[in-house]
Length: 258
Ligand code: NDP
Ligand code: 8X3
Image 1 (cartoon, rainbow, N blue to C red):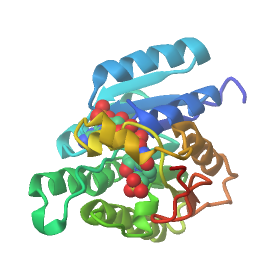
Image 2: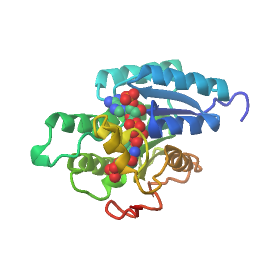
Image 3: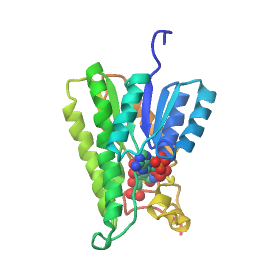
């Protein structure tokens, strides 16, 4: 890289924990500048400070709820005006809430999942992609899930959102044909993060049980896959990576020691 070449910039949503945080560390270690978004500002600022110190990179943080369309637009404009259009947008912010039967489920939980996993992803993409298209380069990487490949009991609305992400990855790819912009998804199985703690509303015992008796993926394993996808040459577009723990072969086949 010459002194005139700006460092590449990745915008990561949901960077305050889990997969997003692991991706932030990975891209930082590769010398990329970062824009980190999530709702928990303190966590972002702590992470940013550490990454700036350890890797001498530029890190921009913003407390953004991706469900809030005007907050997304404001943060995206600010980022583009003060920094530049990101080279990579990692649409990672997402969650599952509850494991209820649809006919007993809470519409508030459905709103949280649909508004975050689908509409949030769309709002951020809508704010960032025009600059990529105009420049003729950029890469949107969506974090989907094996839950977007196979429906499991009581997964209903979360499954629907991740099937939706899968459709959006395909649709976005078609929409940017001819522009030089790439769209990919990385779809993990079980990853031990705060995901299940959120799903089970802070019940640590229930959350831990999800990962008991086998070795789940770590967030760093997913960050490896994301980095692989992001670091292909310009003419290579990886559409979809599905990554599971070796003990897991689908939603129902998990080799647990009992
Ligand atoms: P975590 O709960 O550890 O992290 C979720 C991240 O998303 C946090 O940084 C959280 O930040 C952020 N987030 C949640 N809601 C919002 C919002 N409204 N606006 C902005 N940021 C938000 O879970 P994971 O790291 O596991 O999850 C990351 C992604 O990976 C999700 O899309 C999830 O569906 C997907 N996934 C997870 C798997 C797993 O088994 N863990 C497997 C497959 C996919 P904050 O609360 O600070 O806003
Ligand atoms: C997270 C993986 O199987 O818990 O998307 O839904 S799973």
